[in-house]
Amino acid sequence: MVLGECDEAHLRARQQASPYGPSMLIEVQDRLRKLARDRSDRVGQHNYECLIGVAGLLTSECRVWWSQRFANRIGRRHMTGFISIWGIGI
Image (cartoon, rainbow, N blue to C red):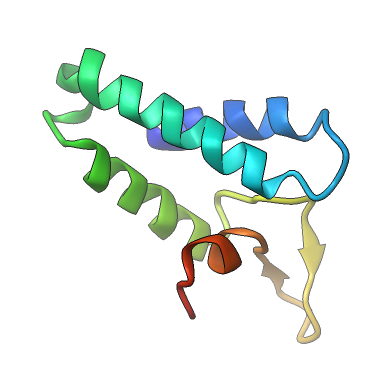
């Protein structure tokens, strides 16, 4: 569910000019808050904080992107946007 919400938010956000990570983050936050509040049965009764944490884990696995995909200097795909917004270092 979290990955699906992030994917839909990415689809909407990428219609805007780059960088669109901050607007995507707001969209993901809104979607996950609503999911935790209105459809908690669909996410194992987990709260918003847990769901946004899952979004962070998916980002660290490069399954959620907050910008267009790109290859980093060592040739692996790498994410952007989420780390600077959340202050999380990898």
